[in-house]
Image (cartoon, rainbow, N blue to C red; front, top):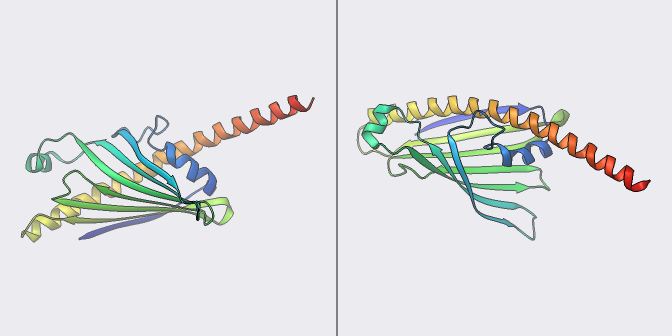
Length: 190
């Protein structure tokens, strides 16, 4: 079993980050070309807590090294199941994901949390647990886990970079929308 963890601060408010989070796999993110589909399976709001719970299935182009693909099969897509919770009262977004493809051989469980930070910023915390489930051969298990954690680390850096772009574009779009709304309100007042 291997672990990956990182913390980052975005120079955007929690409101901006939690809203832009739903756009992070869209066309604004040039670092997420590997994501070829995001399907929302369910979305509910708890009437007592107002927590929004969303289940999604994320389809990605397979990026496993060739030697791994030859061992595990030539499948060119992978599926990830994600459950997220948006708690507006606590200002906390929690996203938990689990690989579905090759889950009988490798388990990758990821948790991402966004919370407000000082100065109008947002703290991003990411943790992943990687477990190779192939039987017996500890050296092979360790190698697979090490490679997976290293790829996870590289992908996490690309993901943060792409999300920064989404945040910047979102800020511009929201500023334009606010300006347009102000103009409409001023015209209506005349």
